[in-house]
Length: 418
Image 1: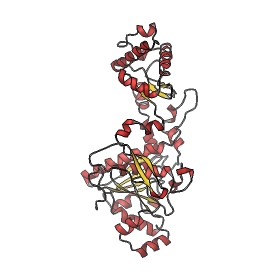
Image 2: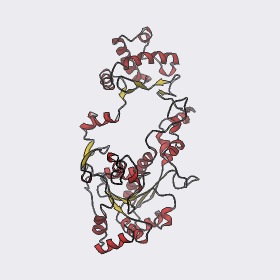
Image 3: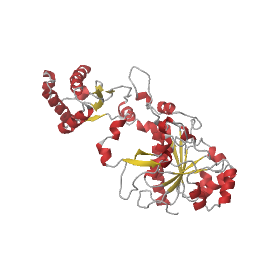
């Protein structure tokens, strides 16, 4: 296989085709961030995901979608109509040259075109073929369509989100497909590792619903180990103690996360907070009487929790989130600020790690701060490339890779294949 990326990158030398829609775009982005050459394949007039807002300067246009920019940076881009015979033949030729193939079509669509896993694995036995779908490629729901709210609900996530006295909620921005795409990226890496040992590719089947179930983190273990059903609890933390414990606290300019933890770890933090209350004139005889080393927060009553909440709430409202965070580090208290977007952009830790990187969009006459990879490693490729324009790398791939002539390119374009 021709080496197209710096082989010092974690996935340097690996190549893949990305035929996903919004359900799987993050998968290809993650693999590209790790150094793989990912070629986004979209229909001749552009992928429908280009029409997803918001848009640069609020001007709807397929080359101004911030959504498209976010999930397709670091990729190359070609156009191809796989519903034409010429398009299918071109895809088969490309499959011979890649290591992985990402798709999120309805079940059976690629098989009907003669481009399913069985066919492509004949063309390239080492191919890792990754499918991303709402419910997976088998089972009674395999043909069901789904939106973000559907998957958030059926994955169990919405059941625990919101206030206890109100109906379940979804997170305000679409999240379900991102979970599924991230799981698919990890599974693709595992399949590539398996291929390195066995020489064989395989079909990876990622279910967005299943990925959301695993993201509920502690809800399933609570049920499995103690038959406790964690429910919506709003600002509070339910299930760990007899009383609900507040987690989200208001401060002068926003919110922070803090709760009274148990055990030796919690005792140190709780005692430090009690000392802070004392220094601010907010401690009372009840707080002074508590032996935090032996105090069992799991058995605290609602009355105790409400009493502590009133005192701590008064303390936190005296300070900004940054001030509380700095004080908590100095005092040894388990507390963290709730970052708004502006706070994330200005976060000194992210800046120090070079997380934000300037990406130039010549066609827009501007540069933008982009989030970089979440991991850093020796030999990684620095910087970030903007998402491809429609058909930007057609000549590079079709002529440079496949050896097509100018005349053939014209014929293919006129015939609607590219």
